Amino acid sequence: MPNPDPIPTTPAVNPTPASPDAQEEARLIRRLQLMMNLVLQTIAQDHSLTIDDASQMIGDARSAALAMFPGKELAYDLIWRPRFQRLMRERFRIM
Image (tube, rainbow, N blue to C red):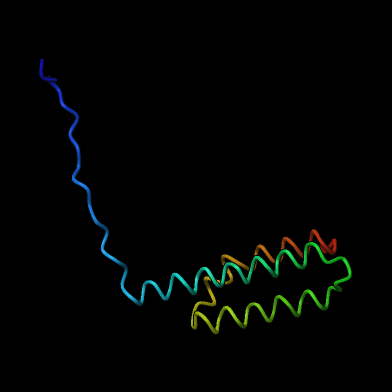
């Protein structure tokens, strides 16, 4: 007996490969995330790090991020600055 209400299926779609520009941007984003996570982890885990050293690391990370993504200061300020500020407050008990 045939199924009276067959479930519609969608044909398999072969995703087209991303353009080289999109692939490069994705690579840069992954690199940025890795770099920022390393800075965050280093500040959080290295108890010999001074507040000045941590601030310098954050400044260097910001410079590197903006070199990778010129003109994206607002994106940095919205995404990464709050994370660094929260970590600095927690790590160095800054009010």
